[in-house]
Length: 193
Image (tube, rainbow, N blue to C red; front, side, top):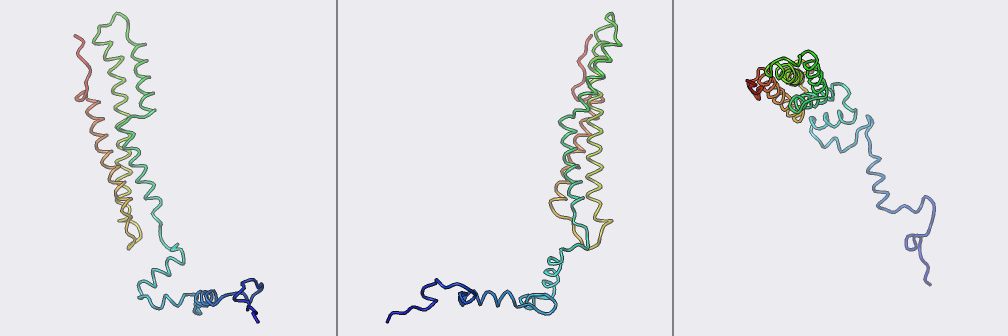
């Protein structure tokens, strides 16, 4: 007669419906030693087992480098702001321009008016750009020097070094440009005589 077993129909319910493959998976995942490590860790070298144990614990013993990464990003952002200009520099420049207009009489020479109205505003913008560049330089150098004073054996991530070096480079370029702008070597005021 044509009777079918439970495995052939697949329609049975309850705990007895597990297949042999599922039973094999359950026994593989349930093989745990007394100290909570998988038996697969026994096949690894002792160094790999230590790394695996550190990952399982969450490795909360040392710094994670989040602060250094944030510092590197801040350094690069400050360097970029020093090159492109900031809201503070724009406001300071506009304030100096207004002060120059108020303090210069209408009878003053053209050279005096140009210097008071535009020259001081240009220098204020250069000064704020230089301050942002200096801040980028200081933060970048601090991030690069931090591992020397941190936990031994914890190397700094490569991307942190790269971004921090980028911030230092932008800071140096921004500081150089700010000094050149402030001293009128770069884009100085036109002669009004």
